Length: 189
Image 1 (spheres, helix red, strand yellow):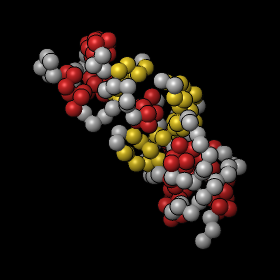
Image 2 (cartoon, rainbow, N blue to C red):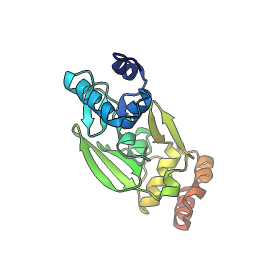
Image 3 (cartoon, rainbow, N blue to C red):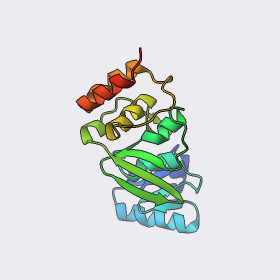
């Protein structure tokens, strides 16, 4: 890549959050130390916003959900974040909840990200996960199953928008008899 085009390549991208690895691929530069030096220079100059180690945003108005699915990979936004957005639960949750390979709570820019562990075969299965604006996010049906998978006793406020055909299509990836019984308890044809 020609000198001077590095920053413009980032700014032309439709992403709002970039990892050092993303930028190396974008710049076609296998030298990750040179990439880190350039990114550090751009963030000190104010052209990019340094979010946390290895992650940068175009500016401070980066997409929080995009960051959530970029802090740890593989991961996707799910649980209460999706269920609240879809009107299935009415309680407000200020945290962003994410399905991941480990459980952890991380605070970045006054936003709490809660990562909940899900078994790897389930986590990497793309069934019921959509890619929207650079964000890996669960469908309402996948989020419903995810929350039942980790919480056997959960209260839902409104299940009318659930597509039960999709629930039963996604259900086999969990390979969990307890979950099948719970789903059948909630299902009303």
